[in-house]
Length: 241
Image (cartoon, rainbow, N blue to C red; front, side):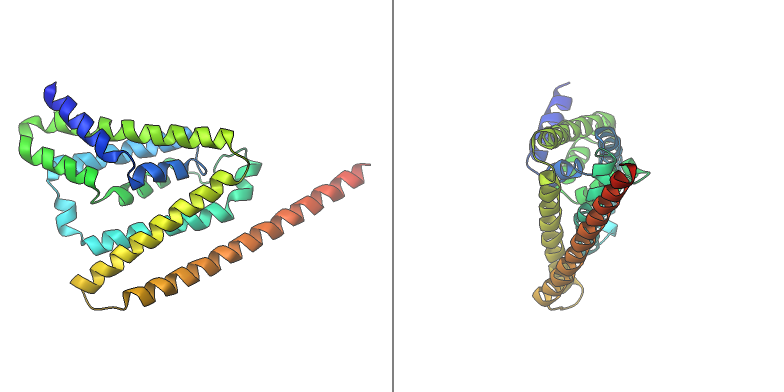
């Protein structure tokens, strides 16, 4: 019991204010609460299971620069999709049109959490306590991480119900964009230091410019579709009269 409480509170504190907790707040603008809970819970169980039982084999065999760059692409994709999916979400009362939303949340959380301090905490406990306590460490780490992330989800949905329309989507876009650009910067630096020398800042600026252009295009297209839908609605109303 003492080991369980020690692992639980250590993992809970480690996750507070972490990027994945903030990411879940952003995800509340795209998915229903049950989808986020299912996806997050599955990712936590799998990640902590790998960390405790495999002892960091994922981090050892998968280059850190590859993990960082995949995570960056995931963050930037969700930032862009926050813009393009805004109208559809409003039409469906906030429900995402993605069929397998829990899987999308699972993949996003899984990639973002790889190599994070909470996973390293689970690896450390697993190594220190041995296989005899692997189950207790796995459950304690998973529940501690999930409890902290539940707070993030609840905060996100509280903001969603109390803030003006579109504000949470804007917050989600900002959060995903910042995480994406910063994580990409980390990944490019790792490539430059461990694989081959590359102009990190030049590549980063180029990606940011392309990403900004794509977001501007999606925003304009979204506004155009919104105007067309309003005009179509007005024509239908006039025809009825």
